[in-house]
Length: 182
Image (cartoon, rainbow, N blue to C red; front, side):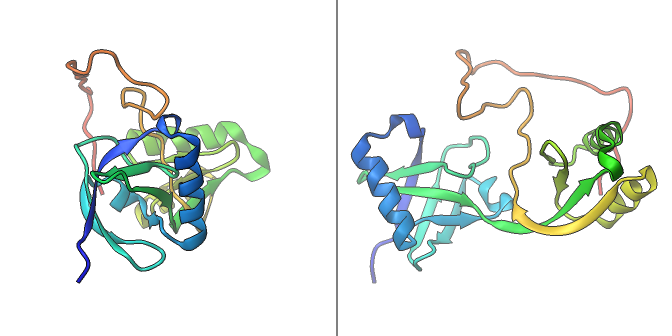
């Protein structure tokens, strides 16, 4: 039985040399990559199966969510790329491209701390019939689609292209209202 390869380090694409970029490209062609849904990409420790059927382990330090295109490395220098897999989502659009109505829907979803993916013409979130009902009463349209889910990470979280110089700080905030979570 082959030993399970454990990936323990996240790399930025800018850290890779040309040979490593070529290796990642070849791995994509042979199915040696991970296609993961949003819930799995939030976890720091899990087992997964590559598209070619190899089982691997992920054991990362607590970091932000793995993104589409994230690259991981193991102790032997082996690389693996992450793909955001398609999953069932609710797509929210506004009739007649009423962007104010779409902003209003975004506000109400954000007020409920719903992970939300934004595009120029639509909002996307993981299905929830209570939220669908609320949005339809606001006058926007909802439909179920299958698409990769890359929700916004928030203004205070690290992004792949930005790093805080001082990681020993916190951001505390309070709300004068309560939140009902579904």
